[in-house]
Length: 500
Image (cartoon, rainbow, N blue to C red; front, side, top):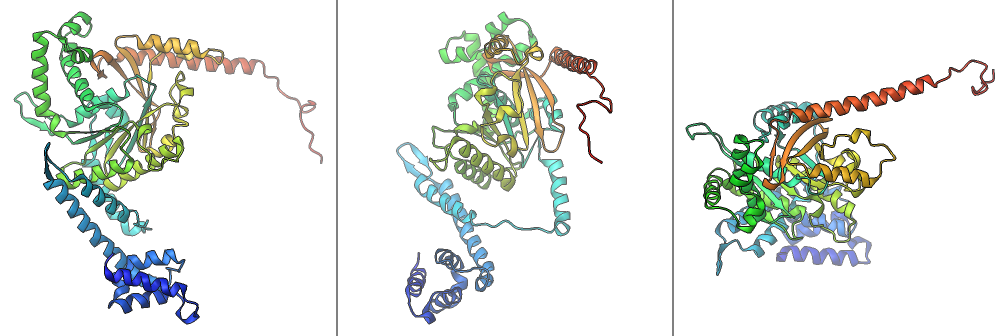
């Protein structure tokens, strides 16, 4: 605070403690004090006056109304000043013994100041007639620019075109089902340049910001390299497991550094391609219990401000339940509720697509994927725009009854996990702008961290047979109920008599 503001606070406190009614602190008196300390002091220090009014329980809807405009302008000038400060700190950095890096202490202070100012912003009621043309232009712009292809054509089709800016996507599944791997496959597709036969770029990749709270950056890199070495081998030899093992580099091969010179050459080749085509647009922040939803927002804002990308980045949260809490005393559910609410606000304010990976609650680990799978994991199912669940395709699941034990269900799941490749069903449980209840099938090769939606026709056929069998049993049950149904007569004693 400067000397003028200190003087306003001092005199306001004196007036508050005064016993003489003529000198008592009121909203009008507070404005008078500010104007006496400095010419037009009330307008120049509008934010301070509002803070003091809140502290001393003074009304702000009478005399202070004329200050509102000055208050917003003052805040905006402060915001502009802080934004410039943040850019300068991030751009110039400081020299340390490990090289040049930003001054993180100053950066943190500036980010906190900006967050405090932004949290004071008010919701605004907008007349639909006045905003119609602007809103229609936004919808048209979204249709042309904000659709983001995932690289899986069937998934794009079921999503209504692909991912979209301004949307929050929740993706859940049981442990070790490949949630992170699928999202990483999508991420790589989004970030990679597409080239024609002559090597000319036909579609530039889009920036992706990954907040990896569970896996190290090196592990994500290893997954990408393994997937890249496997993809061409699978296309040439779709059923030859021996050839896969001979020519592709698995994740465990990379970690053990156990591979032939031929494989080493392939790693070098794909590493160079990765560095050229994908790495420039992949950005990863590792977290060890120190990334909050505010960290996510500030990082995304800084990235957009500093890089001014042609297309808004896609944001990945892996995973939602281990984002650090802003309040350590909150329950797990309150933490997730707050985080998902803030992520939704981030998508709207910054017009970016966010994919948040979520866990299932333990009670539904062995059940068919549904909204219930996300219960007790916070309000994920309510707040997201698109809710996606992953599950293993288990033939015979439709025959499970209430008497089927959890042990029997888990045995069936374990058996499905042992398949190579695993048969994965992606179910779209909710989509605010398109159809729901649709499924996309993938074959998942966990040893090579690779998902494909090609050659999955037999999985769709198996699903149709399972659904037909399920529908048949439901119809059969209804017919049996109809056979046992006895029609009531007007004299039946079970019919309640209504007095005339």
